[in-house]
Length: 150
Image (cartoon, rainbow, N blue to C red; front, side, top):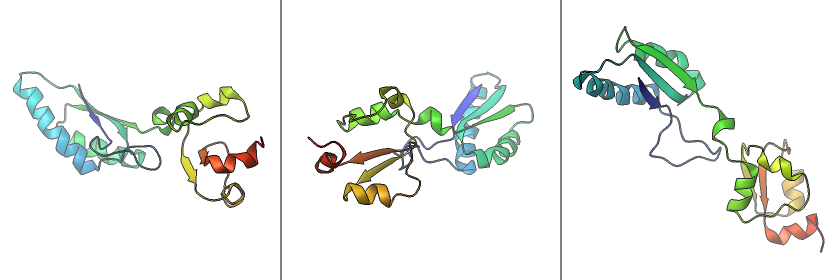
């Protein structure tokens, strides 16, 4: 079985904390020589799995990769943001943050996005559409006094 990543491993994570997706052509370009190498060692590949693929590309990937070998089972596992996102606690630790108030158990939730505020706290909260618990908000130390007065 050959497993190929649907993400571009040579690039860094983007703003949404995920690696950029490979195109269908890129996945095919990587898969063909790998299958050739497997066969050159007198092995018979039975399956080709694309892990962390774009969900929108699933059908096209199955068709394109299936055309490489009619006897090859092709499977596509789409990217799942919850599986690759860091926890709020790990983001907090990375920036040297401190929980001022709230439930510590919620720090184990996935951080699906990060926003760094470089303006006053009031503008960040008031002007942020969809201000909710799905993202981590990093606020500079000089604004924290407004959240928790000394």
